[in-house]
Length: 186
Image (tube, rainbow, N blue to C red; front, side):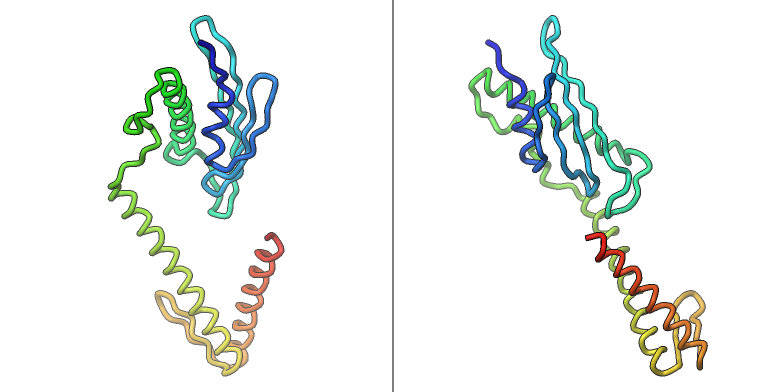
């Protein structure tokens, strides 16, 4: 029995929300992955005793979450492996006629405490930096109007007079410039 592998592979690309384009030897899937743009070229070839599938994954290094120099923790290798396991599982279900969801490779473990702790720590760091920058902006506004600027840090810095107003204005101009750049990009 011969099944087309292209529809099965497309079936697993669609939940990702990626745009699928047919090519002569397979298909191309394009979309976001972990806040980075990604393109996956899948080349399907018939081999002597089965089918050979070659995957070429191109991922942008810069995204809104930062700059990625390399595949941190093998994230993309794991995603490709899950995708291919899902295709194999789907084909097996079709060939055997079974619908056993317990063998589905995409069933996620219910308890991942290390992942929750790591995400919580990252969230804490992001919130702490956001609060620090918010306090600095409020302090700059107060410093611009009153002439007394307090900059928090290891050794708190207090500036008085015209110097406080100049530094406050520079901080606010820099913040407005960053906000303008972010708004212009989106």
